[in-house]
Amino acid sequence: MRALILLPLLALSTAAHADRRTYDIATVHTQIHASASHLGFSNSSGRFHVKHGWFRFDPDDWSSAQVRATIDPASLDFGNADWNAAMAGAKFFNIVRFPAIEFRSTSVSGAGNTGQVLGELSLLGVTHPVTLDVTFNRIGADPFSAKVTAGFSARATISRSLWGMTAMTPEVGDAVELMFEVEGQRRESAPTPGGKGGAR
Image 1: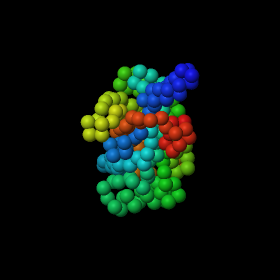
Image 2: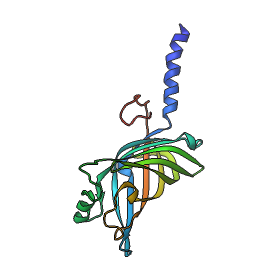
Image 3: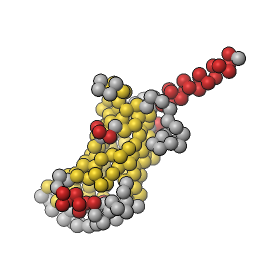
Image 4: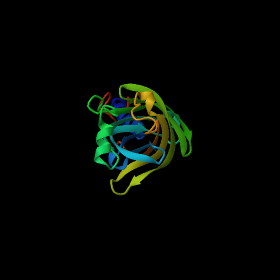
């Protein structure tokens, strides 16, 4: 009888411990900036909004990390209504046909405060590998949310033509630099298996 009582308690304890590595992306404190050359005069930049996502991270074992994120291409903001409309149109992000950008990690390596995330970026119906150079900032309690929070900065450079986005080259550069600032809040309960945003 004692064993029957202890078994479910042990299972709950194990699930809670495992979930201590899983964080839901805090979208209000997460930004993605994209910049590309404008006629060689400047590197114009805009900001994307992350719809939702999650990551798993153990600072003592980077190889166990995972990342999933959904980005809203309609949120891209260059600070100018005409440019925003052009970017949303068929020649660029074609948001009517492709309303989401997806990123999923395939492997993660690193130690201390630096590492690399290798993943797949799905954009305009095309998927290609992308490598992110990552800086782990810190894990700690957020005094405002009272939740354990993990924060990262990252960079990557991609060629937009690989995803079929060739409009206005070379006037608008093919090379796009991506800069990420990401925060995640640790889950307090185990994710539902197969549920939306759950670690699978």
